[in-house]
Amino acid sequence: MFRKRLHSFISEVIPTVMDGVVGEVPRGLAFRGALYRAGLAGLTIGTRFGGQGLGSEYELAYAEVAADRASVDDKMFFLGVNVILPALIDIEENALAAEFGPRILSGDTIACQLFSEPEAGSDLASVRTKAVRTEGGWILDGQKVWTSYGHIAGVGLLLARTDPTVAKHRGLTMFLLDMDAKGIEVRPLRQMTGESEFNEVFLSGVFVPDDRVVGGVGTGWTTTLTVLGHERLAVAKAGENTVRRPLPVARIIESATDSVSLDTLLDAWMDERTAALVSRQIARRAQAGIPLGPETSLGKLLRTRNGLRAAKLAAEYSFDGGLAWIPESGGGDLAFEILNAPGMAMGGGTDDIQRNTIGERILGLPREPLVAEGNAPK
Image (cartoon, rainbow, N blue to C red; front, side):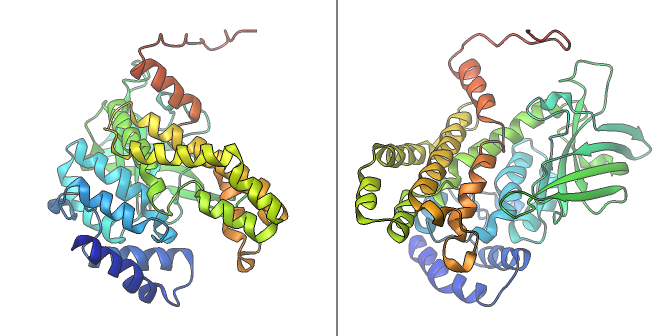
């Protein structure tokens, strides 16, 4: 019954809802709104937080039915729906989750994540954005970068330093702030895909009330690990629909069909790299049920490596078609995925960070020696 309802929604409701809707934000709002009204948003999120309160098997059913048919227009809600809201629930910030959950799931609010800084990318514990105690809350000053959809977000989850006198992992606190607050300036960064999904965010005297502290003062690092765990888990699962996924093998072969000779097409099918990509994509699907913890790095690493391999094959088999940047020609999506693939390997932690996590926290290998500032090996 549930699968039949999904089929009907995707094949009948969505085409009607999206017909004639133009523009990234309007299309995203249309899709997310339709999903929420149909009772299909937040399938495994509790009802008190705006979700459906269903079991994981419903989420799996949606992933299977929606594969290759879910709307890429929903990607602006990816972080809020799959990372920030589940993390708030996990951290037991129930009041914040209850307040923002329905808004995030319905599309009324886009959420972003303000972690990385110019001097603190993979080493998030080195963030310099500071939060100073004031009456009723905190004053924030600093800079963030690579903030996805910060230019259209209504709320942001931000990591800041509240105590500079203690070890860097201990003096951090997480905040949930309104992106339209006084003192916030957002500057989009243009990418080689032609999009400006990422942003720089400058904070100057931004006030955040006490009830927007997430997880407690000084617990920012623990909270960060929880958020990143959900992000890596979400990224690992993302290949089950068209939102933030590696190119499927079928699309690569289709590009070869459109632009090369029959001999080359046969070579594409027989290429051991194509076979390896198929097996890896099957293996990645098997990891969709991995638990929240260091194991999420396995799925995230496999997913991004698949993406890079798929993009390389697509570029090779499509030849000049892979370089086309004319969406109406039918090759625009292929060119976008080829150019977008390198960036996929950075969101949620680079591949090297994932390997460190796997080696140290899963395999029990010795930690890499820390290089003190100014004492890097020659």
